[in-house]
Image (tube, rainbow, N blue to C red):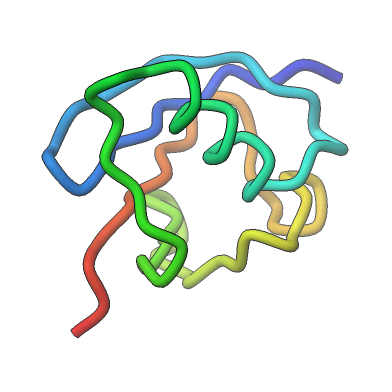
Length: 79
């Protein structure tokens, strides 16, 4: 199933995208990094769900991470 989510990068840029629920979060971020010149993401960054506030890993699929349409992913620097 297709999901529509918002990804906010480390420079506070927001992108509304559609992804398949079985896709890995890291795959999405890598594709965005390769195709969006202003997209700010580093592999050591922290990925967090805006809805649940849970930390996510790039290896998780959206289905496994319980990310749904309308969710927001925050990409933040590790503290």
